[in-house]
Length: 421
Ligand SMILES: NC(=O)c1ccc[n+]([C@@H]2O[C@H](COP(=O)([O-])OP(=O)(O)OC[C@H]3O[C@@H](n4cnc5c(N)ncnc54)[C@H](O)[C@@H]3O)[C@@H](O)[C@H]2O)c1
Image 1 (cartoon, rainbow, N blue to C red):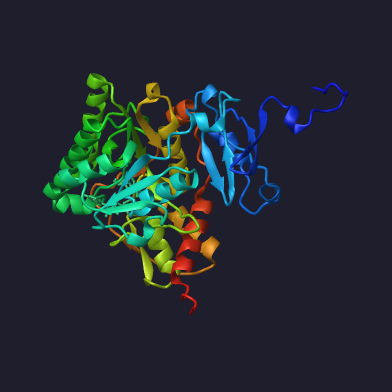
Image 2 (cartoon, protein in one colour):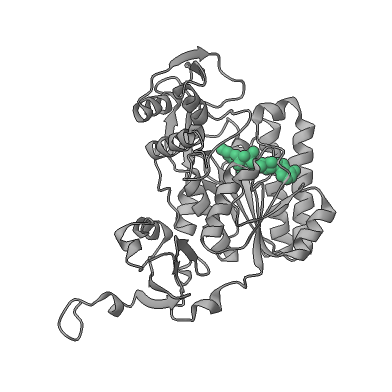
């Protein structure tokens, strides 16, 4: 297409691109048909595009992704105004409308809180610090230390901050522990969540985004798992997540409450500031990295006699930044898209493949010990993520190498001595 001077159109003549000045920052808004394409084109802070003062972004509500995004890269704000030329401010939620992130001192909640803040959302984190770390809460978030089953506290949080959405990460999430103490898991994950849901409903919160898990599929479904695969949890942890999903599903059916249950597969990887710090650690990637760092003598491989090509278990590893993208899309998605979504890559990697990737990327050698299978570990857990791709336009951006690289970089930063002031 040529412009009226017979030349290729300049960017400001392109109908998909809009030039704006917002908060004194020059902004170039480009509509991409989906968030995956938008993410691919998003400049990294410090890049030539970023330094030029023009930024572009992102998914478009007109194309079904939801209300406009406001993202920040360094000092610059990048926006998508969707119905396109409406003034930017008109489509933003008032400053006072916050997102409540429960479990925001934990691994995934802290990173999603970081992402929400980066796009200009006011965030309130509620966490009792039973498993999390105070320093995982982004400093820009309002932090409330407390429990999701503390009804008076919840009331005061909902009254004080106008909460438009709840992102509910707070839970106990160790399969083995749930087998030892099921009652603790039902109290914390089910009773706690129901208390939170009741108070959110009373406060007329618009939507509820829930951290669910692939653990509820059990070990009898054929691969890959889709949202129609029957839930058959084999441990109390998976069952507690299923119970909360069901409560949310019925509230949706009977009272039209909007909810999104994201069934995460194996969350992993790190951002520049935040990563996995579970105590005790039971997840494979941090355990292999501990061995690579010399913190443990070797990595224990729990079973090499599974019916998989190399005899070790296969899992679907999803980078925590990709999970954060999925949460943002759930926040912006139309209410008609409410429901259950697998959040996964659709690609499985065996324990051996993970160990090999860690050796290759870290350049460190470490031993392995073959141990017996852990009861209840299915040979393979891999998702069919086509629903989340189709409805949200979401696609995982990170692969296993990127997971290992970012998690290793985070580990090295944690280990680095703090410089004297
Ligand atoms: N990490 C994974 O691979 C994975 C996979 C599937 C699902 N999930 C789910 O994602 C969510 C977050 O997982 P994570 O790995 O970040 O866990 P995490 O343990 O790092 O974070 C959970 C946070 O919730 C807090 N918490 C627990 N009970 C609470 C309560 N009653 N009141 C207030 N705060 C409470 C803890 O202090 C902690 O900071 C969990 O709901 C988990 O079930 C995680």
